[in-house]
Length: 141
Image (cartoon, rainbow, N blue to C red; front, side):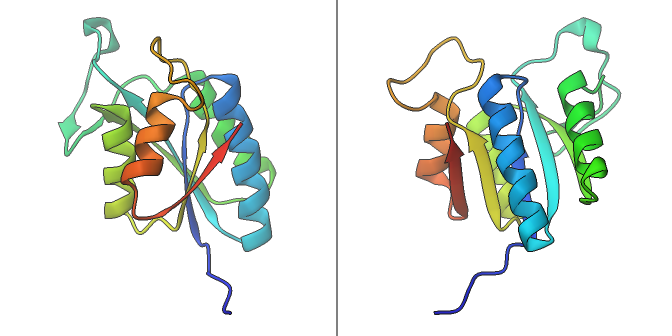
C-alpha cells in the first residue's frame, strides 16, 4: 500500500487549549512529512471595532489574533512554511470550504474549542468538519 503524501495541512485555531494541542500535532506532522501549514481562524461576526479592511470570498482583513501570530512564530522556529487566514462565516463550513478549495491534504483540528454550545464528545465545529470533509481529518483531544 502506497503512503499518502501530505504536503499541505490546515489547522483551525481559536485560542483554546485543544486547538493548541492540534497545532502541536500539526507541527509534528509537518516536520515528519516536510509539509506546509495553513492556520485559519473563523470569525462568526465581526464587531464594528474590528475594522474590516476588505471582505472577499469569505476572507477578511482585520487585526490578527495573538494566537495566530504565535502559531506562525512556532512554525518558523521549526523551519516549517506557514501562512494564516482569518475567515468570516460559520466555522465548520468555512474550514471545510477552505480545505476543498486550497488543495489541503489533511485537516488537524482540536476536539473542542471555545464555542458556548458543546457536543457530548466532540465540539460542534470538529464534529461538522469530520462529517462534511472529503479530506482526511485528524481530531486531537
